[in-house]
Length: 340
Ligand SMILES: C[S@@+](CC[C@H](N)C(=O)[O-])C[C@H]1O[C@@H](n2cnc3c(N)ncnc32)[C@H](O)[C@@H]1O
Image 1 (spheres, rainbow, N blue to C red):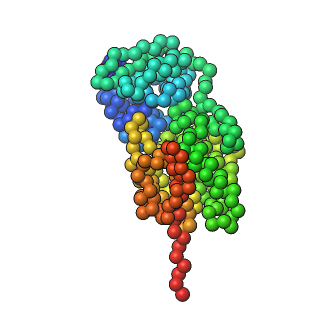
Image 2: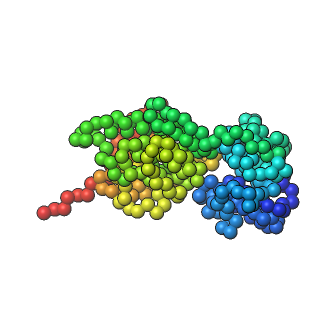
């Protein structure tokens, strides 16, 4: 991307730099650099004085944008829309990614917001798209959808997981929870009555709003700014209160503070499969739950989470399964009665 951009000067905006290296190189070349990364883990690697925390106003408009292109076409479309309302037609966008993660549909997504889009030749398994001629189009993102089967409205940015659609794993999880919550409270298998609930990795906020509608006091956690923005939009659309926190895993969530944790946890980081964040989350969940609290997860059945759940949270049962996913319920032991 740096080579394709040529010498960098003027105002340079770096979008979704993974490790801060593009930002640092643009600074080294003497440009006036600001950088924004959606993921808090990537943001923490940016030189602090150069972090841009929005909004996109006319006070500082870049001449050049260096952008690590997202894999999802909806993400390209959403961010291109935002850029096109901000940039002048002469500004250049240099957007790069690994060739294996690129499709021709990304060019088309860029062309909705930029008049001229060309592709570089591939190099070191990567390729760059050049775009100029910003032309604001009718914004499609954030996009709203009413999910009849959940009676919930979802509003999401194009960059979030599954956008405003119901993921198959989340569907199985919420169907299973619906079955349990509709059981009379006296049944041993019913859920803790409304209390403090956490949706870890909230994405569009479907799970958080589902819990809010059922009377839980909900905190939604995600690493992504766009996910939390979508979670808030979804909560507003369903007239529920959901607190949001941007952090890697539980972050500063106090111990023994939650009655219920519900999650369709991450299994990717960027384009790469990675189960480490979920294993770390499971290890911490036992401490975050109050005695008697529960952790509900949905995940791909081949993932090695069951022993972790049993070891770090407590008795774990499989409540549902289909061809791809299992739904687990882990109970944090109630405090032992003190001996007389
Ligand atoms: C599989 S998606 C689930 C999204 C949403 N709950 C749903 O059911 O559609 C996982 C979410 O976890 C977030 N995430 C990834 N790594 C995380 C981490 N270390 N801490 C918190 N959230 C994370 C992602 O940004 C993504 O929104």
